[in-house]
Structure formats: C-alpha cells, structure tokens
Amino acid sequence: MFNLFKKKRDLYTGEPFPVTTDIHSHILAGIDDGSPDIATSLKLVKGLYDLGYRRLVATPHIIGDYYRNNPDIINRELEILKNACAEAGINIELFAAAEYMLDDYFLQILKQKDILPVYQNFILTELPYSVLPMNINEMVFEIITAGYKPILAHPERYFYYHHDLNEYFRLKELGFLLQVNLLSLTGYYGPPVTKAAKFIIDNGLADFVGSDMHHLRHLEILSSKETNVILNKHIRDKGFNNF
Ligand SMILES: [Fe+2]
Image 1 (cartoon, rainbow, N blue to C red):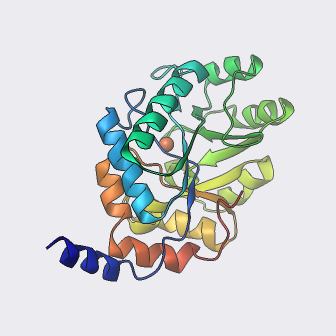
Image 2 (image 1 turned 90 degrees about the horizontal axis):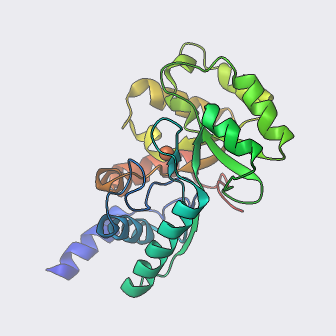
C-alpha cells in the first residue's frame, strides 16, 4: 500500500521542484504566527526536504507591535529545531534570520545594528498589507546607509501596488530587491496577487522566491501537482536563490 502511494506521488512530481534553497519561512516554533510547536516545525521541514529543499533560512517576524523577537530568541529556537532535525535524521541545512517589518521599532534595532541578515548583508523586510508607510524612501535610505541591502518580501501581496504594477519598477529603483512568494503564483492569495506576481517575474524584477511557509496547509498546497506544474512553468531555470 505504501509503495503504491509512493509511486503515485512520484508520478505527480513530473519535474523536480525548481528551487532548493528557501530564504523566507516561519518554521521556528512558537515565536511568531508560524509553526506553533516543534512537532509542527519538524513536519514542515520534513515536507520541504521531501519536496527537494536542502537549505532553509527561517525568518520569524519582528514587528514592534506584535513580535519583538531578537537574535538571542531566534538563535535559541534555531538550535532547538536543528537538534530535532538531527534526531529525526533530516539532513538539511538550517539557518535563521528575520522578516523585519519596516516600522519605528526596526529603525531602533537598525541603529543598534542588532540585525540578522538572510545572508551576507541582505536583510528580509516587509511592509503592512493595506497602508503604505509614508516614510518608505527614508527607510530604504537608512538601510542602505547602514550597509545592508533590503529584500522586500512578497511585494505582490501589497494591495496599494495593484492599481499600477509599474510601481514594482520604482521599488527596484529605490533600492529594494524583490522576493516573490511561490504560493502567489498558484492563486492561493487571490487573482490580483497572482497577476502582480507574474508581472514581477515576467518583467525580470524578481531577485528571490520564498515559501513564506507558516503552516501545514501551505506545505500541502506547495506540494501539489498543480503547484509543481505552475512553478516549473514560471520559475524553472531562472536561477533564483542560488547563493
Ligand atoms: Fe513571512
């Protein structure tokens, strides 16, 4: 029975998953709105490993009003997850950074340089979904002046850019690198988000893609045949996340 199931699943996976490194996920246990416990974290990591991922960067939220995570908290949870994966025999590289909301609290920690980059000096940032902050230009200036390169998480999900997709060209000119969520291409977040995600990718504006994995439902959709076909159509051979 097990073999039958496995065979069926292999048939489903017509082509290899198009990326093996993830730079955006909420797989650390209990410190943001992602995985609630270590058992779920293990399931998420195992699922990503089975899909073909071999390197994951966990990026818990840091949002002044909600999640005041810091490098100590994040690295402590990273060690717990690494140990759990080793015990479970999951051979995957795990790293941790953060997803920084561009708020006043971020400016404080930026001044203290208490920042966890995704790699080198690249930091993952996000904006509120419905209202564009007035000081976004200054924020980018502060980040670059402090010696970092800002990656903007899921630009396709910010509603205020949907009325004029050329805004994405301006974000690049401002200094952002853009990270599209894989699930945005599948319709998971709704048609306007899919349209924006395709625009960003088709115009060569995307620098990275991410799973933004929060829970098992995300994993389920990411692992489906339909998603595999869509992702291979849009992002295969584009060299995303090769660093
Ligand atoms: Fe995220």
